[in-house]
Length: 440
Image (tube, rainbow, N blue to C red; front, top):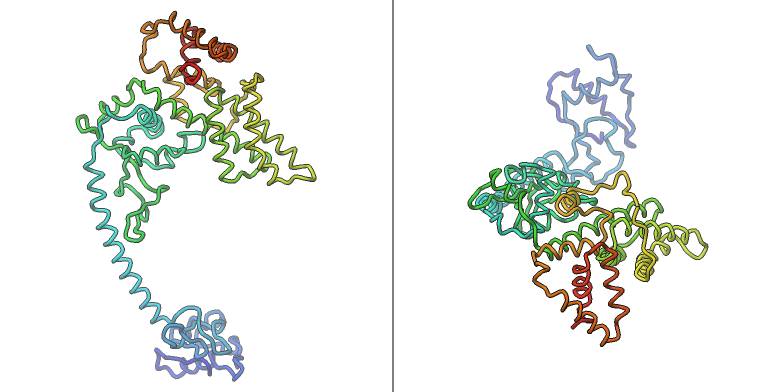
């Protein structure tokens, strides 16, 4: 018999039943069918025999060797026995118990190490304060957008990345991570799901997807509603910070539409091409609207799809033409053929809470042209146009352009600002600010 039995009974009939159940010839074929062992006392079904045998004895397969200790493997039924000598994939029960004990000890050690690392991290997070009045305008606008999604949990609880999926058309758009790296938002280990924090090479890491974030209290006002109101009621005036944030958001809005169109036409863009397109879109957004950029995205993806159907192109090579096609369309637009500005936002494509904050504060939406937006942000610095001698400025504008023989270019730049809706004074200053090399 290739199966060794260890009995937990002294009943001779039960022992005889177990031996008959496991009896086999030299080739490993069982000598009797299970049905032939019946009836036995109250057992009348073949399916109950193996269960009864397991209760009265433990079977060890002599053909299965434990990979750890070279001992024999415990088996529970005929189907588990092997006909030839071999190493088992799993260790024997004794070795499994030892492994489990070692695993538990290791896990306990790792938990202790993790708790030791987490303790100062938790203390720092709970004791940290941040002056709301000193936060930059771009951070305040992002916090306002987060508050629109999570409410009081911004300062009086905790929230996750999943709670902020509606922040931009492309989820959080990296904005939560941005504020975290600036030490504006903090993570709260006590509110996170188990397994969120872990050690890697002795350093504390955490999963961003399951982490919980919060805004630390103000040192004077704490985390009260009054403190929150200082953020919600902030008058925003930092033109540089707000311009950069608006461009970031606009690029996200355009890239979301591009992804949608690429899905429609089965285009796959590699990471390098995506970065090129983002840079091109950001440049284009200084002049054109999001809707105009959507039109360009729609056109180039459709043109690339047409290329893919030609014999000398495939889907990969056609998609690779998209970055240059976008640049070409912007060049055409700069030469006078402006893209359409009535393009409609697709149904699943949200504006995002940050976009709604830009609309609430500044009236900016997908149809706002970049020239208008940038000029509006420039006026936020609070400079009074009456402080500038406009007559002298206009005279210098004409004199300089005539001397440098760039009158046509300068008038074109001025006219562009007027077409964008700026006043004569603002258009004049904007044309000079955007072309410093011409007026130095």
